[in-house]
Image (cartoon, rainbow, N blue to C red; front, side, top):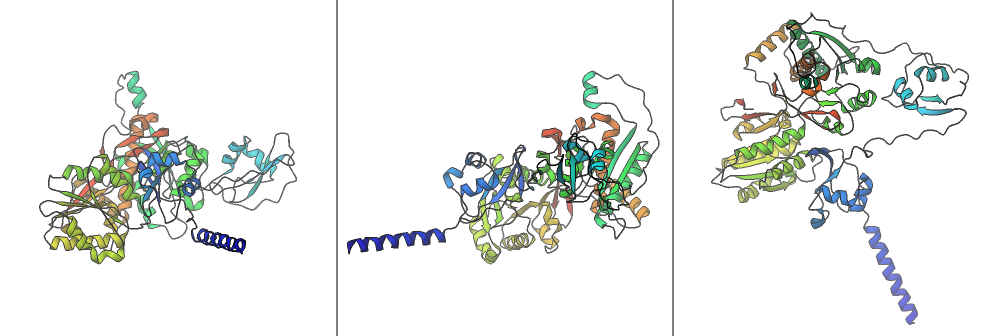
Length: 551
């Protein structure tokens, strides 16, 4: 009987343990798509979910626990906490788990290897990879055109192998896409008497260049209904070329519509620089193909800076989001008074965490103390009571909104308006994205004296902007958008750099801040010969409903 009782008790315990084991299933780890750059290093910003473990996270991201502890100094003390943000290092020498794993090559058979064409590859890319000529690949596969299609399977010859019987080649009539616009040749620059320069000066500055040659890559969709944003950017570039002509600069421009396909690599490599593409996917494809042989400039995407960790000769033209957040931290530091208080507002379980991580890092770097208010949309109605317990009456409450979610920011603005009505002195600091939120009444931003750090801002009252707008209207019979301004500023700045400094023009970026119509340029050298624009504009929404550019 005792044996039966003991056995029954054991089975009961085992059953309970099994039930508990079934109940506790670790939450799968999904690789974050959010990346932030702090102190020159790029990290994944991982939002910790309930029941996730250190083992699961390190395994998913391919890092060690020690690397996590180094990136998150308080992790050993606090452990994993649901809803917290974990920084996970992205090393350039490691495989990026977000990217598609490389396809395994087929084993050698019958004197050839098989290669499946990826969307970003052309015949020259594949030839370089396997150390054969492009013509050898064409002959071996019986192809009569260099045009390839995604997922096409090619036989790559091994030395000494004979080509198989020619296969029927697909009928392709289109070769390398033709430029959208003819090459634009402007008149010769005015030649000044040569000056004697030191060896150090020549190493840094090089010599002026007679002709600037650049390629512009944009998805214009010129054969169908053009994409308005990209056409506006292109129109701004044309305006820059027109003005540079009047200043005596000679330019060869080559404009390619990416809807017609990617241009030939060797053609791009003959350019002084490549401007574009716009989308991250296309930008990475170009960087992979050019292999650092020519500078590639990201013209619009503020979050493309993470590509610089992997690819050489990458230039981030607009100031990145991380630079804007860093500037917000510095701005708060400059504004702080002895009786002021910093309140840091974040959204619970937010999908995007870049703003939160970057701004908190900027505040910590400057030794600023702050109080966190973390809430969800369902709690919005109770927040004024929490704010009343947190805010000071005898100083300025400097509220930093660390979110790019329009509904949440709108709720924060509403609650801060309530606090203004109760007599609290409130100044709001926020990322530039909130300026595009249609659901937020512009007057509310003025009431809160919103302080915005941004890559872009146009002072329409300035003479330079007025001249540009007038000329743009006359030429294109429409108003210039922000993309037209950005196309103008970006093309003008980089063409002038090449014209002034020649082949060593990238060495001269960052010597001084250059102000454009829409954006400013001040570059910082990074790893792998990369450059990042550090110039951020500061604007304040004034109580009289004007907007002031102060930096």
